[in-house]
Image (cartoon, helix red, strand yellow):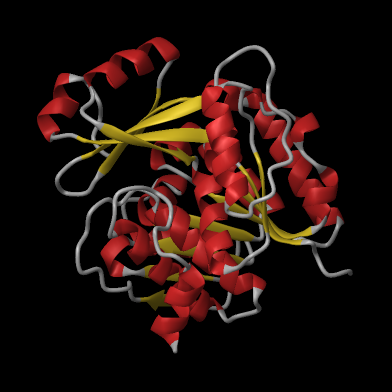
Length: 331
């Protein structure tokens, strides 16, 4: 097999994030479940946006954030996701390509506008997301660049896409293309509410199409309908080659058919905003796998990347180079 052009190709929702501080009273008044990711329509997005305090805009989306982290670590990355040829779409394309991520997907020329996610960050650093998917819902099999998938060591799939029938078909197509080329497929479960909506089909996806699963403990417990992480871990073992379960301040758990290994979290001196923590952990973990590192070291790199992103506002790294940060931490 030839050396891949890309380390990781991400497939996900291309979203512009709008981040703002809010208190619990604001969430209650506006009927927003704390800690959730709620899908909203364009009218609801306009109402919430008008009610929010001052915010910052930045290109986001779970898989796109992970590609940004991977690029900062020195990986070669590509991203497949749908935007409209509008102002927000231009912002997204500029932001992701300016950091070295290849973005081959053609924009929509008509139809829904570019997606946006209104992220409310409460004083405890919890993030609550309200997402208008817009153009993201139009991602289809024709948008999957077979050459990019075949030329990527790992194809990384964002679980949120499973909400859209056309995207679901696109994901299965990409997974088949990756496997045919002898490459690996990784899946992020994205959100426990998303898992609740698609439990049975997610299990089928993990069992038959996924080599590497990334999820937090709430998502894994939701996947197996369990309130106990150890029970969920037992159910997870052997369903795919490798799984890593993040546990916030408790670190993460690496699960394979042969073993279960707990790895501590990186110390965070000042917790500001948990937005993007899982995305950046995934970046560090996948980077390590692409370099042939043992899973425990991959998890350590993921923890360093996650600790960096929760120390500031926003879902993407602010460090000049995550590669330099990891080198300084690991020696």
